[in-house]
Amino acid sequence: MKLQGVDIVDNISAADFREKYYNQSIPVVIKDLSRDWPAYSKWTLDHFINIVGEKEVGVYNNTKSDAYTPINTADASMKFGEYLEKVKQGPVDLRIFLFNIFQHAPQLTQDFTWPQHLMKGFVKKYPMLFVGGAGSVTHIHFDIDMSHILHTQFQGRKKVLLFPFNEQFKLYRKPWEVLSLANFSNYKHDFDYESFPAVRLAKGYEVELEHGDTLFMPAGYWHQMEYLDVGFAMSLRALQSKLGGKMEGIWKLFGMRGIDTLMKKAVPEWWYKYKTKQVFKNAQREIRASGMIQENKL
Image 1 (cartoon, one colour):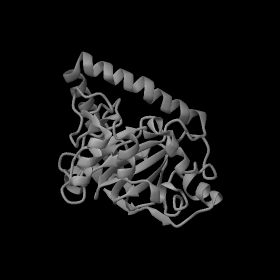
Image 2 (cartoon, one colour; image 1 turned 180 degrees about the horizontal axis):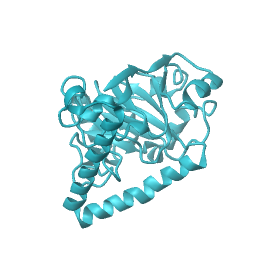
Image 3 (tube, helix red, strand yellow; image 1 turned 90 degrees about the vertical axis):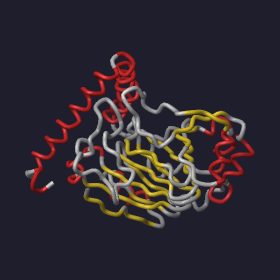
Image 4 (cartoon, one colour; image 1 turned 45 degrees about the vertical axis):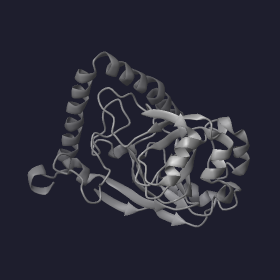
């Protein structure tokens, strides 16, 4: 794979943000966007334990989905405070995914400011919290609603791998899903290029986030998050400005996901084999289109 760094700026004007990144669908890290938020220094794991520790949450492990697993299905559930205590004690491969802590503690919404000077269309009912222990991985995927994301890291470090949506077939996207058939967990040192050669052609980005960093992820971007330390982050979502982008998100969220879940229940093995066959067809087409001969150059 061909990776480059993400641009990092201390701050940025709305005009520059739109011209250089939003309109071009290019990611960027803004370091000072959250510095003036009360959340920057106020939010800690202990703070969350005190105010929402008794709430039940779904937790996710590092195992990739199989023929029977619907999209975004939790692997277990536990009290939020119990999970956070486990995270504080040391490495744990469980993570919290798409937890709307603000429904349970709406006062937290007073601790940050919606950056509407950068873009419009924020879905204010659904700011989301993501928590992970050191070593936990959110496997590579794109967000099913096709929204733009401002992802702010509040504790610890996180390594992020990013690819534009149109790299999907080089990444071995599973049809009717938001996931890749390939495993990118150790992409730096042990990626299986023999089984997934088209990944060599994929062009993307990588960046490490620290406390206070805000990553702009354009709509549809593939991303993998690896927690280098215990940490948590918040994502603010904004709908695409064009009607076509909004409709694509609605279709994937309610149409595509519904059909895939139905087929996984009805004919899981057949559906999995059918999709896997299509994955490699799409990848082989990318290899041919590149003009490269797999045996000699990939």
